[in-house]
Amino acid sequence: MTQHDHTLVTPAPAWDLTDLYEHIGDAGIQRDLQAAKVRALEFRAAYKVTFDPDHINSRDMLSALRAYEAIHELGMRPYFFAVLYGAAQTDDPRRISFLQKIREQWQSVYHEVLFFECRVMGLSERVLTALVEHDDLSPYKWFLTRLMRQRPYRLGESGERILDTQTSPLRNALITFFDEFLGSLVFSVERGLKRERLHMEEVSALRQSSDPEIRRRSAHACLDELSRHGAVFRHILNAVVMGHLNESRERGYPSVLHKSLLSNGLDEGIMDTVMAEVVRRYPLVRKYWGLKASSFGSETLNQCDLLAPMGSRDEDIPFSKARQWLLECLGEIHPTFFDCAREILKAGRVDAQMRKGKRIGAFCECFAPSLPPYLSVSYGGCIRDMMTLAHEVGHGIHYILASAQSYLNFRPPPILAETASTFLEMVFCDHLMGRQTFQTRHAEILGVCLDDMGICIFRQHALTCFERRLYEKSADHILSESEINDLWWRENYSLFGEAVKMAPEYRWGWTQIPHFIHHPFYCYSYVFGNLLSLYLMRRYHEDRDDTLEVIIHMFRAGGSKDPMDLFSECGIDPKDEAFHEDAFEYLGEIIDSFKTGMLKDKSAVDSFSAVT
Image (cartoon, rainbow, N blue to C red; front, side):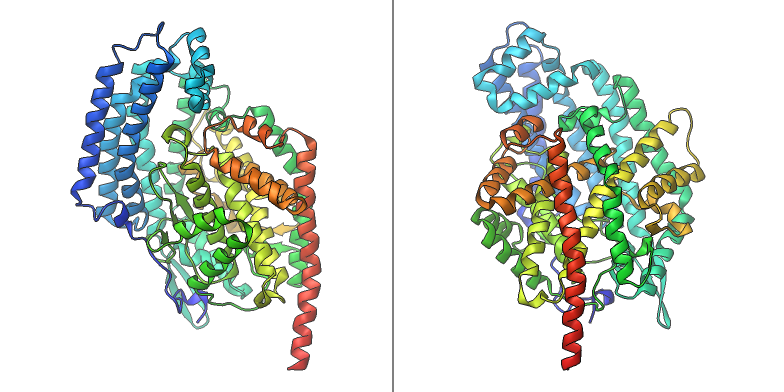
């Protein structure tokens, strides 16, 4: 039985959320939300009137910050449960209704404490600077610094309340509708003598089929069906863009990227430097795509073959075996990584099943340091699925290490959030190539790694360029489907050039990218995080122990430090050309190893065939 039968010999596990709550009727859900509401009201009574902007001291500020965190910790448990419960089955109206109800209840709690950050930002420059530098508040230095940097763009308490009341329900509704709609679609794919009706995760899995005709048909069926609903996706995207543009104008951001840049502690100059370095290396990824095309007997790679496996067989690697190999890998690397991964992969924390209605795309989530991470993948039993599992476990390791931080300092910024996952994926790639089982499949394993790099560095760069152009063009009118399609085609062609042939229906590729809806301008974080991972892998091979200590230090920091300060502590300078040279040189070495692996694996397979 292969992954394309969508039924594994060893069934993949599903979530068991009872560590959070027994079920949606669990009395603990309302008890925790009510407790959060009571604390929020007490917090408001204690600090809204007595918050003296001229005489606030470090002791009072520390007490206020801890009380503020405690409210969020209480509210995040039911909110987290509702998000996971809804993501498991987005086509279940009861689950979606429950999620909406919990969101509204948390929103009413949040509105009671919304004044606090506004009051902190309203402090004089002298007072706020003194608080930022005070030893008692050192754990919150980056949080307070971020508030200082956001000061010019805040609207005051009444303005913030109005904006939040207007935008949050709409944004949440758009996200919920997008997920539910995409999860409900059915795609008709012809395979052999029969036509099958598949959901999104199943048809996406067929991109990894060893049969090129199945890859072509599944890609066509997917995009053809999405194009039939072009008006729906256009309206969703335009609504998200308009909402983001309006908020940017209201706040006076210098660019539509600025909100995202603030959350990452970056300025636009650093981002532009990174993006320009990626463009300079387009020939590098095109070289890989050319090698991959040649292995398929072609000069040009078809877009539907970007994720095609190098092997000639489909397979069913049980989830239990993937879990075992991943834990063995991490046990060899560092006991801290092993302990974290064992906690993440315990029963009930992973939803690895393929099923209709499940939220599209793999993810690992954790809303607070007091909560365990949960991860979702659609595991079909191939090498790429094992790599995806390693990627998401990397996110989970980051969350667990960061859980030493308090709530306001816990969540890593996006540019760092993608580093742990990619680093672990590359380390697992090395581990698999060292196993006897995969001695004749090095090119296949490296191909998966390089496919992901092509997506997470170069394609995510193209997606960011598309998003920027999208917002620029939307500044004075609502975009039509053809305008969006043209922008999408242009930016993808800039990347692919003549190395990758796009089918006409690929003009609709933007419709299936959840980041545009969930997190505007998140995609460049993949670029940054993956380059950092390549740089760290180069260091790891030069000085393993020292690099692991640097990585663990970085992950334990969570969101407690200015990312640029944290990089400096670790001897990393993303503005330095040497950083990019090291990262891309290492990528070039992987591509060379892939080329060598192609010849070696073919020779080994031919020798085996001759003997047998």
